[in-house]
Image 1: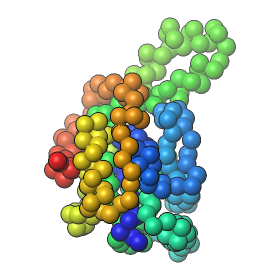
Image 2: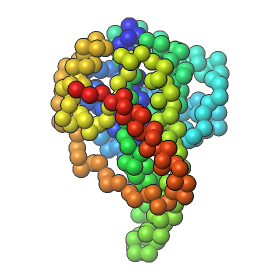
Image 3: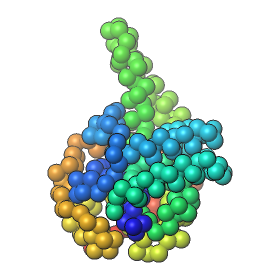
Image 4: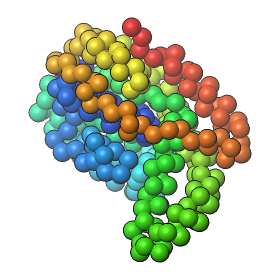
Length: 276
């Protein structure tokens, strides 16, 4: 049974929602209750609410941001936390022959999940650091901007004409390094985990390859991992216009070694990328 548990993991803004949506269309059970769409993911987040709420609870209990946008880690799980995760997994195992879940925060707990689900397979979603950091900057700034746009007409006019450009530069300057460090920390955790796994226990891919190679990925999931799925075209759910442009944020990164580190890490993970 455990061989048919799929852990869908990847950094925030990497396309994990999109790929989980596709897998759900193909027939994989990805949760009874899923997080609905919202700012940044209008099509839906496709996160299993049970896992999401548990992850948020664990992060809060260890004084870490529930968003998961942190380089901090949980030093040690409490007995309560581990038992709660066990109980969620036990119910899923009893209900389904094959199932999986997606939540980027899973990256923060890969050691624990390796212990609780030793036979699980890992679908690792990799997106380049430029696109991920750009997406985070755009999304988080949009939330800030929405507060101003909700005000009265004159305040909105002042924001658009005078304040927006200055606030955007300040926001990017304040957060670009933070988000790049989070991308590095998440993907270091992923690399550390997959390097301990048998080669047939994980695959690394990105959403771009699915535009042309969804059948190859689908056949791999069926033949290698024995998942009972029904093919659905990835292109039917992929909406190119929802993918925003990259932001030239490198100018806001004072420590250029971080960029060098991100490139090297990205190259290491790309070496594991699934190929036809």
